[in-house]
Length: 34
Image (cartoon, rainbow, N blue to C red; front, side, top):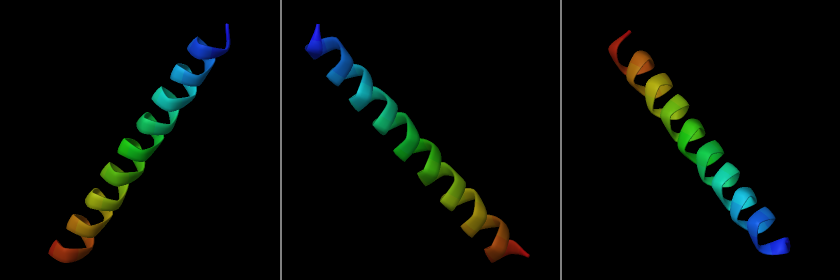
């Protein structure tokens, strides 16, 4: 039962990293164009 929880933790970590990257990208683009 510990393996699925580890996989879910990795999935959530990946999702958070992707979201953070998109936010940083969007912030950089808006700051560059403004």
